[in-house]
Length: 481
Image (cartoon, rainbow, N blue to C red; front, side, top):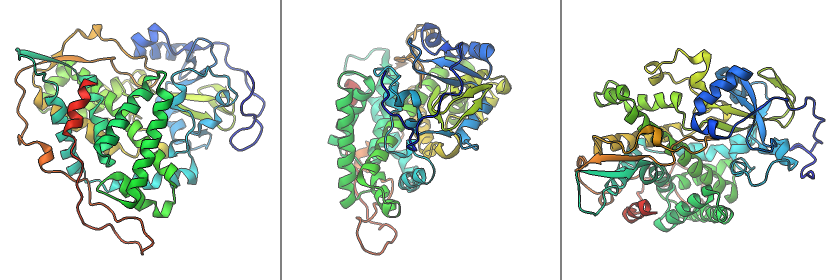
């Protein structure tokens, strides 16, 4: 295949390959991997050691070094030797056009002008407005918002048909997929029309179907319109606060739009899988379930346990070598890919002492990342998942799987791992909400809105209040998608 980029991101010619790709590698695909990835990771460790050369499709062109060992993963993430980068333009096989262009994983790490792919001072510049905006959140009021949306989604699980003794629902599609996305869009200050367009575009884009490219373009346009509107008409939302804190960073509208896109799409994926996997663990682990019900174990501790035994993000595909190095005994060339297998940590010999009780409180897992690219929204992400689970457990006592665990089908865990669906049954009627009041009668505010951007001397945002949009119709619409 002809070379598409003859130089690296620094403008220098790619150096000669120092070491050929290992003659022995393993497929990171196929039925064995999909059926039981944890046993598969363990077999890779026994065969190759702490790092395994793997391929992600049949031609062998899409390849990388799967890092199975916790210590090696931490070394790559912290990048103290300044070897590894998140900038996917350093992926030599991608730059030279060697990868199969239609592989579904490629769009997930294709370069975009955002903090996700930036390093050093550029990463700090692109990150600052978003991080400072998150610091303005009133987490107590944000929890109220999450509870309100969770209550509405759970109420929508009950059909209008003649009630019976039990009700059935798909917790993945009717709850876990929707709650994080609705919360994040609400916090960004979207009106209902924009939220509907965003939800449609994200679903279409992530489906990988023929409309994915147009959906991505539509999503970009929606983000740009939101950011542009909030520049002159700020409200009590994260985008308005990003504008306020951008007066020093100087991001243009495209860069701000990209950061809004990143926070919504990235936050939705991990939170959805975390909710789903925690529900599944609670429904299939009687000891953990009993401890949560009896308050011997908090929901946060149950969530932390899931990070060890069924990590929402299984494999982080997105670190490339910017200079020759070694990794787990392998000589790595410039432009080679490292894949961090968070799903393999539970079988790491160095971590075997983390049993089901220690794992409830041990936070040494790397689910939030580490180093400069560690997740900046872990407080918000944890709050969304914990609140969503607590409301679900309160409203649906007696919930249980509608099928045996062995009958569940699983999506191929290249990145995230969750069942394709999570059918549950629960008795009628549900426990009533605590206050019994619809949330739209008393809107909650995440913060006071900042002032419009102007040339006036800088000052702290004013204290005037704004109204968040009423979204009862949006929540009612979503489960029928």
